[in-house]
Image (cartoon, rainbow, N blue to C red; front, side):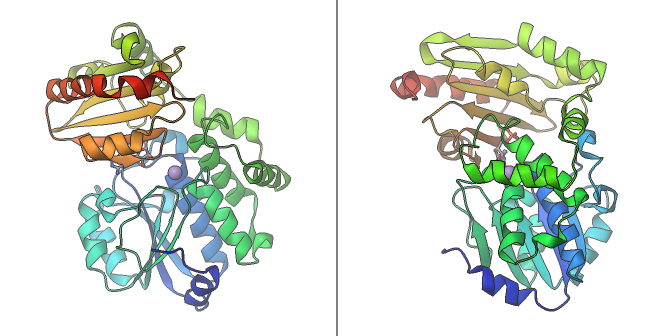
Length: 339
Ligand code: 5GP
Ligand code: MN
């Protein structure tokens, strides 16, 4: 589907509406940042706005303005169902398929109201009547900024909205280290600082909030659980349910762990396999041309971006890793030269 003209979306939201903003499960900085930035903006446009997420957000995002008003489907199903029923417009921010809402997905799918996609993942499904889907952009938060700009409403931005957009851009680009080769990203960053954010402080709120057990889990992941396969330019980390329990794992604690495996010289593919209740959550990261989203989609029923993707597998931890390892020989040549 073609991207919708901004004017058509502007027309759709020209009257005050009850708007429900949804974002993906295991919400990250961009999911929460883009949703809250959009919520604050739309409230200023006189809409009544509710943000709903499938499961809780990590603690390190709790400083964001509007966080405490978010409805969480897994812990407050009744209120969420009511919000879905009452919505006159539903926005999908930072995900490309309603399946990423888990149990809430089918309820949102059944809603007869217009659904608007605002996202930067490749290949959105056809579940949305209106869409702004731009995959080359750093983050959905950057897209939200561009949307507000296209609406002629940059004057409505404030320090709180700027903080949310900053968080989204920073977390989706590894603090401006990937997916950020565009001038516009930096122009927006400059604008966020002009609006008064304290980037140094916000960066600390996002990244320097480890508990002791989280740091020890990271140490254990690297020293004991990292497997390096130089011949396949691949490294991976495995965390079993017992490992996670031992380190008192909290939501968000394994965020970023997979990147350490990718930081090894000449390692171009990294994976993290994490055993959760009944499923194995896999994170893939890559350098250069090796597209982990295609890899995750084709073999693990997942998805994501070229250099950062994920999947939720119903196979056992051992089976999932075995499958991964067995796939590597056929990608040996591709993994060798990614630049
Ligand atoms: P992470 O590894 O940080 O959980 O996710 C990295 C990227 O992959 C994110 O952009 C996320 O949206 C995507 N992703 C993670 N898990 C899944 C999944 O189960 N299905 C799909 N389609 N995408 C996923
Ligand atoms: Mn994103």
